[in-house]
Image: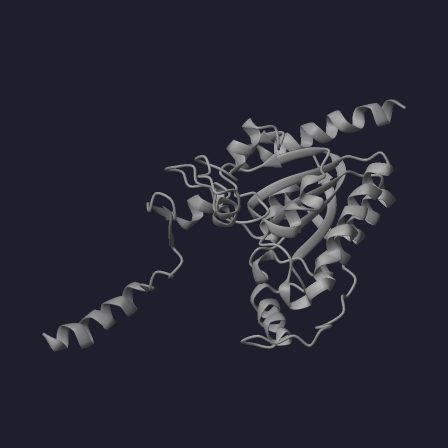
Length: 286
């Protein structure tokens, strides 16, 4: 049988031009375990067609999905201080940054762009969970301030997609200082009379939740998004009570008035366009 497998089969494949299937042709849903054709998943914006589970998306994908026809212009963000504390744990912080940049092709865990949303000008900042867990360091703080200044300059709404594990421990107190800085950035937009809209995506935790993520004029979340400051186990140990089912999930927070709406990803762009129209109508009339 060896001549069949070693000679005949390769010869037939060569004649027919057969190619090996790529490794990423199918994707398994982490919720229902169903296999999904990659093209089908991309068309559904990474939402499982079987169970509706919203998979995590990159910052670049968020921008492409939000702006009209996927057209937008990214801005260069101010360069943050590189490894200010010369921090080292199992690896040097400088090495971790280099690896994250090589992996994501981004300078830090935030992308900022401007363009049209529903035909109206808008500035969008999207956090990258794939970049060191979306941790908030000085680079993210600088980016949020830059996004706020651009929104004020263009007299456009600011939309922020959050996705973060919290502060970046490798920058110590410098990371914590980004909480008031990001709060000031949000206030700049509000004082200019412009809409500040926050879209909470899975996960949004830690210092990001404790600062700019909860300051939106309108708070939106994707289904089943994890939103909180401390972890559920820490809270249970502190209050010495069993937490209710769904605690720190988007639907629970919506029921208790913490966020304004839970919107499926496929409806999110249209919802943002409608909100921008509502929020800027009085401004145009004036």
